[in-house]
Length: 183
Image 1 (cartoon, one colour):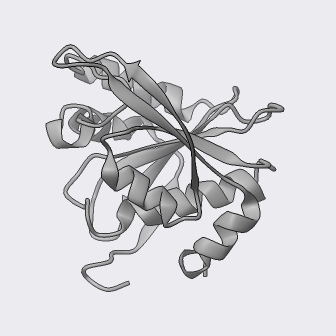
Image 2 (cartoon, one colour):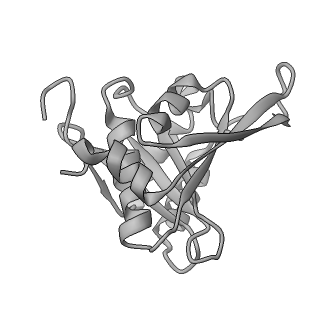
């Protein structure tokens, strides 16, 4: 990969990732467009979050995003609700200064590929705050389709509720759109 498009991979979470988790969830630019907003996120909360992210006994899987040249993970992706009749939901957070360099797109593509190829998902969906144009552009570039809008779904302490859009992708749509990322 070139310097402006760094190499991206996913790995399981480790206990030592708590400091990175703490940094991400306290980065205002990273958390501004999350579905749920927190007042703060302590190191103790980050340690608990990292421990839960390591637990593969349930229906959720979280992956640390590793970027060449960075000592710690720069964010995470997740698949929520695997192994059901319903489709799993994709989640993602890019918590460090790699936004705008294709890291999120590559990490989401790797995660969606896992959903289809490793976990047998028949589709993947996501809920995206309507104002999160970057996330919508990212998933559209991976073959996703806008499937609907839940009006005033996300209550906000500062300002009116946000709409939430539902996006989804089927395996063939994803593979056609993301072929260049999966080579």
